[in-house]
Length: 478
Image (tube, rainbow, N blue to C red; front, side):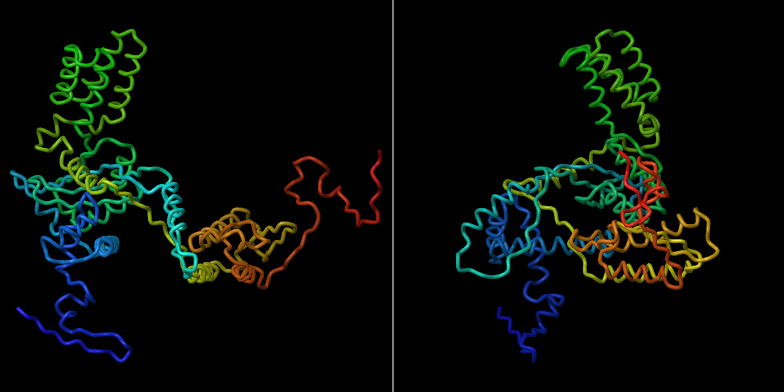
């Protein structure tokens, strides 16, 4: 089959191919189908060189390993941008997962896994090798070097939503902190419409940051502790008290687990306390104390008998399997990942900061402000009549400082004005504009000499001090 297409040359020197734009969705060189095949084959554990060979053999698409890496990373970044913007919505809703009783139920799981990172030492080694390979006569701009990670491994966090039949799932992964997980939870809850779901159950491993984000999420009917993690802690205490692999250890572990499944958490705490009282070894008592503290801090999460009566799951198997799958993709041979830090924004952010501060000053008239501005040598007070309340002064200053802190970024040391010690003023022009708004129609009083704030730090008070230029100053007595 032979396909012919017509290529037009634009007046500006570029090319225009209407057939490609119509077929590929305005893609310049790579079609949607080719990008999909590159992404499906590109996650090979042996690297992009093997993926490029598989792509040539299976799909008949010949691309270099570097070009394949660019395509896969570009599509991944595009998906991340769409996800952050809320344009990438899941293909199912929370009301699609029905149970045997006809109710809708969605499970939430949060867990973390470690991924290898590119350290600063590895980056320095690579830069040294590249510097030796660089030709002496070659000139041109070099790329901006990124800093390596502080440690060899970094914790990635995964959030999973799935229904009771395990037919639908929605997975989010991030390299950010707990706050990023909380934002992903709230965004996914809106997209899945979890408010219309009858039962939303979270099953996690009991980490404090996970519990904190789920409590802030406030969309779960119950936050449960994973039964496997609970059993692991019980088995660890049993090995410490009765030895590893002994019949007594297995019997006591089975007894505690049976109490958790059939009765409640109070029965578990009673059994642990009874066993701790019967033992005299400090190491064994310490192991049982750790188990008692672990269970006592999570009493509201351990309701296995009640959850089983309702038909809820008590294990986080789907979340654990998703973590293993994601970690397997990121821990291939030779795979290292680097953290993309935010770059310096354009200067328009500082202009926006001045505009927000101007609006703040318009809402709070200068007649209502008493603003002290301290320099390195003088104390200048801009005062208007009618405002003498210290609380009002403090509130006004807090409003101005918060507005500047939200809109202005910390400057470099060389750009910091000499008359200000606060890092919010990025440039002298910003400080001058702010002072002009404060000092307009104000009485400026310049105070020289030693600062009154230092009167309690030893020495003579400011009123008793005299400078050398004072003619009435007498030499100190010996």
